[in-house]
Amino acid sequence: MNSFPQVLLLGNGINLAYGGVSWKKLMGLIKTRDDLSVDDLKAPMPMQAILVTNNNLKDAMKHHSKSFFGEVKTKEQADVLCKLLNMGFDDILTTNYSYELEEAALGSNTVSEWKLQKINERTCEKREDRYFLHTYNKVPVNNGDVRVWHIHGEARKPDSMMLGHYWYGNMLGRIQSELQERKNKYAYRQEHNLEIEYDSWVDSFILSDIYILGFGFDLTELDLWWLLNRKARERADKGKVYFYEPKSEEKFEKQALLKLMGVEIRDLGFEEDQLKANNDYKPFYREAINDIKRMVECKSTLKDCEKI
Picture: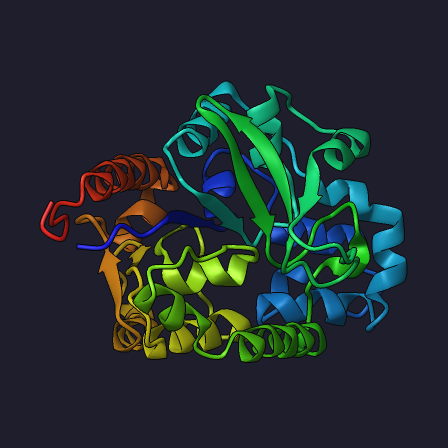
C-alpha cells in the first residue's frame, strides 16, 4: 500500500461556527450600490462581490482589504485551528482569503502584513502577484512547520482574490498550463522510483489524500471541480478525497456528482436540518476533526483505514 501525503482543504465553515464574520457582512461592507440588499442576493457567492461593487471590486477592496484579514474570535476557535495545524498534514490548502490559521499558529488574534511577509515563501523563483500556485505561508506547528496555501488568493493582496467567473477562468487556465507541462511526470517518476516534488498546491491536490472540511464545494467552484476530474483521470497512484458534510436532501445532486469523481462523503451521522435548527455546527466539526485525526494517524501506519 502506498503512503500518500496527507492534505487538508479548509473552507470558511469552521470559522463561521466559532463566531467568524459572515460573507453577507463583508458584502455589506464593500457594497457600493444602493439598489441592492445583501440579504436578498441569490447569485453564487463568488459573483456577489462583483455585483455589489458594480464590477469595480479592485477599488472597493483597496479601502476594505483589512476587513478580510479575519480574526480569531475566541480561545475555543484558536484551539480548534491549532488542533488542525498540528495534526500532521503535509500541506493545508484553504479557499479563505483570511488568516485565522496563521493567527492561531502565531498565537495572536490578528496578524500584521509585516508578519505575513515574513512567513511568505514560494517554490519558484518567479514572484506570483495574482495566481498563487507556488506561493504559500510557512507557519510553525509542534513538529516544525506546515505550508498553508491560500489557493484563491490572500486579503493582503486584493488583486489575488478570486471573485467572479473571469478570475476563476484565468486560474483554471493557469492550472491547465501547469499540468500540461508535467504531462505524465507523476506516473513516470513513480514507475522509476523517483521522488515526486510537490512544488505547487496542484501537485498536492492531485496525488494526496485530501480531507475537505468547512468547504461546501459549490458548483460554481469550477477550478476545483475540474481538478477533481483531473485527479480521477490521473494515471499515477494517488490518494483519496474525503468530504465532510452533514446529510442534506438539498445537497443530494452535488454529493452524487462528488461520488462520481471518487469522493467519499462522510456525514458522521449528522443531519443538516438539525444543526440549523440548533444554530450550532460545532458538534459536527468536533466529530469531523476527531475523525480526520484518526484517519491521518491510520494512514501514517499504512493500514486499511476505510472502515474506521
